[in-house]
Length: 105
Image 1: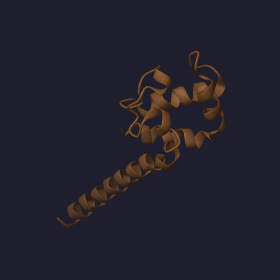
Image 2 (image 1 turned 30 degrees about the vertical axis):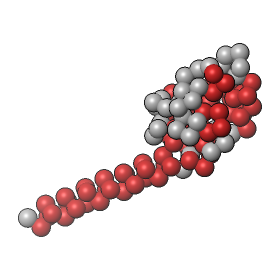
Image 3 (image 1 turned 45 degrees about the vertical axis):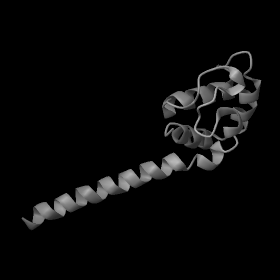
């Protein structure tokens, strides 16, 4: 009986640590997003420059693919020059962090 309790406690502890890391990584991009909010809105609800799709509702992978595409020049329409400059200046780890944060909207 004691062994089952110990195993259950270990599993619950592991899940709690995983959940906290997930929440922490999602919020790590919050300070990075502050400069994005002017065009994209506080919760990613705005169509920047009146084009494209709002960020709200997109997964971290979708946002990261777009940011990486802007950075390497393989993504974006006629008004992409602003995002190209921003994405190129961001480190890869910052693009990941901000993408994870945006996915929480």
